[in-house]
Image 1 (tube, helix red, strand yellow):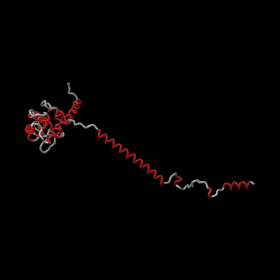
Image 2 (cartoon, helix red, strand yellow):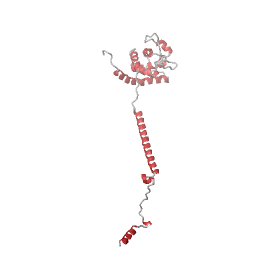
Image 3 (cartoon, rainbow, N blue to C red):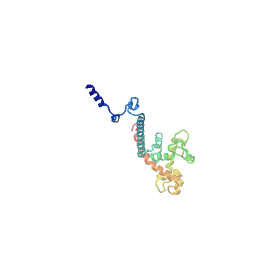
Image 4 (spheres, helix red, strand yellow):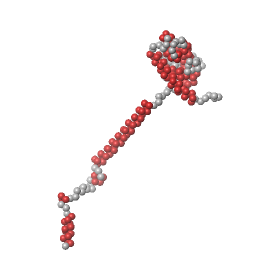
Length: 236
């Protein structure tokens, strides 16, 4: 009886092939079974992560580039400053006559040579760009070394101040702004200003005057900061 029941039980556990449960096959030798994914799928995931990191890095680069462009477009303009080694010389030259000022002489030197004492245009020389014939008349040995040297700013800048004072006198009866007229005379010669009864219609001269006029307020701003930052002489 027990054998019949056991046989019945065993027969009850026997499934036909078309009644096998839909369980996935398991093969211990399959890498997909051991690691949970096929090699191709794992490579795909790694490749996807690499692409994601590359896209993130590219986005960061674009963001930094955009920030740099915005900074460049919105940065405050850089203002010109009198080089420290020439400051005292320009201050002294500006005292030559009342018409001169430190910012004006500084702006003129900037326009003439960009503060380069070795500047040579072929027709004018030195930091103040004197023509040889003009230097022969106005160049002096301001340093006391026995030589009037157009290449020495310590000689050229005081000569610039003295010559500008002379030009202010030359054009004083010409209608117009005295500073603009004197600057035009420095560039084109006083005879050209007197003949034109104003600034000559010479593009180079007109651009020269306009450039210096634009630089004067900038040098005024930076010169004010320079003298406020300079230590006061003893006893003051």
